[in-house]
Amino acid sequence: MHTQAQPKLSLVNLKTMDKKKAHLFYVEDDESLGFVTKDNLELQGYEVTHCMDGKDAIDTVKTGSFDLCILDVMLPEVDGFTIAKEIRKYDKDVPIIFLTAKSLKEDKIHGLKIGADDYITKPFSIEELILKIEIFLKRSKVSHFKEEPTNYRIGKFEFDYSNLKLSSDQDDSRTLTQREADLLRLFVQNQNEVMKRSFILENIWGEDDYFMGRSLDVFISRLRKYLKQDEALKIENIHGVGFKLKV
Image (cartoon, rainbow, N blue to C red; front, side, top):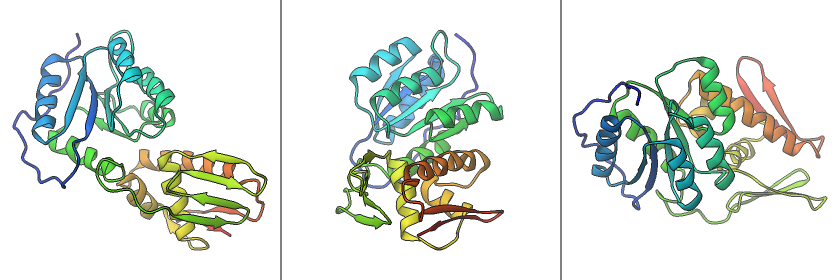
């Protein structure tokens, strides 16, 4: 078992929003760190399933249902990246937060491409972790009632945000991830207007930083691919500023 930096050991008393009890999946092989983090999260009202090795984690994700996953990257035998890939086979939308002692840019980009939503670098504070969790649960079914069905017409496409469906006049239908749908809706709501990168990142990712920006670029590429059937629709890159959905 490898040695990892510990979070602050003091128990926190953050004010959290009224929420249905969220079920968190937590993978950490350091016994002391895992105990302290799990204890703090449970004090905040979360249900926590904690696994200490990658093989056990993969078996657990096949049978469990979780609202958010917190994965240590450095694990014996099966690492956090492999676990994240396995999670994405069963759930395309559940938020994934990586915990890592590494700050290598390549590792963070690799994790975001796999489908991670955020990174926290060790040593971290419990307060930071809880605030990150709240950011992603605010967008989930756990933290709020689902909105009334919202449908949009975008060129040759029908976009059903509530059901994450994007359908074309050619009878092609695609199921989007929650983040893809959130980003597309933001573009549709601000069509033909320039949106700054910082505005998009703060509204969809919860913060504006370099690594979230790289993740944004990946999602922009996906949306362009989905919309390419309609040549009149373009997500333009406004150099040094942001993006614009031209309809």
